Length: 511
Image (cartoon, rainbow, N blue to C red):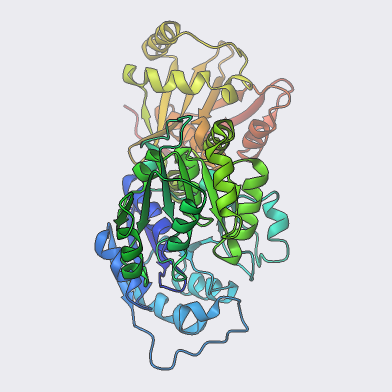
């Protein structure tokens, strides 16, 4: 079983967003059968408050900072957030995990740069995934995850990568909880009946109260729901402000905000991690920049038409405009929803666990899933037959394949999740034709290579004497061409071919 260790902190200074998204990744990993250990340091009471509401995995607390919390603040812009030196934290983290022998370390911390990454990775002999969106320091990672929007992520990180990394970039990889993958969506209404306000888990500057004032200054007299957490140092003051208005409701420590984002016709929020939650729900949003790393994200999403940007001075006017313009709110909702589908955490988890891909024989119960994959546009455009297939015709095809002893159809799984399929057909020439595809929503994770390798081994177990595989690839399908070339197939001239086997006699026995 794969063990993933996640190093993340939360505090009044840095907020709760890093911990929240790591908890979302934790849930996705646990769903696929991984073990997870969360490693954090008690910088103040915030992390403990968050984890008291939700601790889905093993938890290890690093020693609290000593009285002397000086750090080399010139090393990275956020070095002071750790309240210990990068070297001390790397040593503490490695000591905490050495006996656990994790397969992966995930680190979500702006305070640590390539020195921390390389020290921990070398000490533990494992692979490392870095979650970042600032690109403000050197990074050394096997995988770099930046779930924020950017026009060009490679340009954003130019000169920052100390080694070649695999990229997981953009809102497609936003780390949202399972509730967003299968939860509520905003149902558009022409009239704004209520507003929602969420300015982050800590809101140390007390912006929530001022945003509430801006809503009333805009002339809105309806229901307003304000969401905050126990980690908010100004929570008592916010309670007083909300209690003074009978049309204001304050909600505290709501672990799942998807229903909150879905039930209001206009949302006002900070441009942090919750931005992607609002997008997934399709909530029309006015976004405010509450931290330096949010500026580019809010500006970019505003340019895409997925949010409307504002600051405290312009907020009343922006609210008036949107409340009076239902078409503008509909466009915001549609464009936001198009960016995020809620499967980001699942994608990242599958990438971490892809080496554990396994095959099982297909059954008639797989018909619906296989049919949906086969009819997806991205699969059809690279298929010999590009027409959509009716479900009854697909069922007949599947029945014929399963009944034919010269054809083999397997479904690939990671944990309990089906992620692709591979088929082998014995040809009159004596060769075997291979055809495969992964779940179209999971492309870009390197699953195809694992699927092909697993399929070859599965067929070799059935026919240990060996065989020649053939694959037909359409011109222009560069992804499949690269897949087969990397796997050792040779161009035909009309097909890719590869000789597989035989197995050494010691590895099989004749039946």
